[in-house]
Image (tube, rainbow, N blue to C red):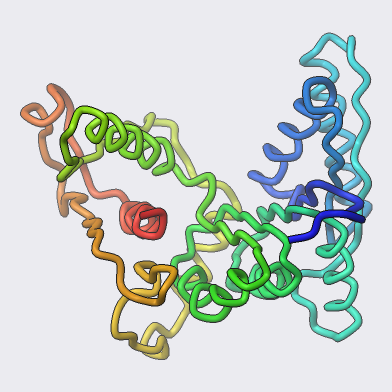
Length: 276
């Protein structure tokens, strides 16, 4: 993928949402000193709302650093991810073509992510999102996996899910086992969540959207697209959801506590399936 003539390194979509604000704050903080050479912008449907959010985040970052470092808000580009008209799609495509990477926190992704993935795949621009919507990921694999391979675009959904530390841990365990001459056969993962854990507004909106879908209309496949390899065959790796159906003691497994049903368990399994 040719990256000459790119205006930005990163364009962030969805900066006004819960996770988008965290991403924008992170970029504001990191790009003020050690990564000051990174050129980034935000894209929003409502520039005024995005500007207000970003100005508040700038003050947050300044306060956290005792006001000793200059922090400036990024440029705000305007586009509608729904792309209801050819003009809107053209405007979004121009934004995508102007950057090396598109990061998006705008969900539900089955509503706001499809066109962005398509354009990134077609234009050879890298893409990452925070979706937990497995049906969306499956559809994007089926539609744009070959296109993105041909153009050199890396399309990486499911970023930022709480299974990622576990997934990285398993990867490192596998590397360690191989260095010692062994093969890692099985890993069971347990996650601990605080009693005050709660849902963000975006997650609730996505859950509501998913519950309203007609799942009987989803096309049946010979195997799960999440297991599709580069040559189109089915991966041999197996990831199984062992989340208990009811509260179960885990004293024998981890020495204390109990495990219980977790609604995001299947989503995390699907995320790990694809990373295999």
